[in-house]
Length: 335
Image (cartoon, rainbow, N blue to C red; front, side):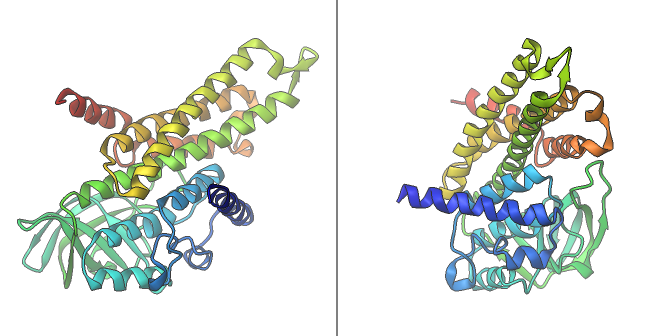
């Protein structure tokens, strides 16, 4: 059984790599047709019935390619949010998303619901531009939930960032009518959803770091200086070894966090550890890759700049390393 599972994951990686090699910016319909959007949606709702373990593989491959896709907001977070909600309405929406009939994005921010009117503002919302509906995370006296709002009822504006591979937006409700509110099935669902977002970014960052290490090792093997490959110099060997050690630590932390998300376990500590370490590592490894490539590493043609900028943005999304380490310190100090 384990061998069959490994073979399936290898095939999934190969298919994802092939799709991203053909087009680093696959559109929404391409993601739907490839089955990525519905990979965690149950079979009876039109999905593949897989788990977050398979989603993590896709995220890693997107990070390796620095792919400009809407998979994070329109797929990973949307499916996670709807799956955490209770009732037939959320199941119906899950099916529509898996079939590509509805394109949605999840909004984390400061929002308040007064009767049927929603007010609030959020920044750095992934893949909100172009979505049909937005799932706005809200808190109320009866618990947290999701306000399902047509995007036309909100002010959604593209938010420029240094990383050109991400599509972020500001979302403002001033105020906006809300016809549907989905309640969460669990009191911790909102926190778990944030952990899911943090782990998703960690998976992407791990892919970035892996790609940068591979590119660097390939380069130092063929770049000659003083009559021999620069990879034979001790300082370069040590730098590459340090990169590998940091990546292996990130790989272990990310794997543990992914397993807990997939199993529906307590993700708070694992998600914080994975996000803090993997995103910091990606920035450090991409920066070291640029340095070890020498002058060409600083050119536009090398493409390293795209990975470094993506890694830097990943470090800030859904909690900085400092914020997650503070969370860990507070959690352990109370034990």
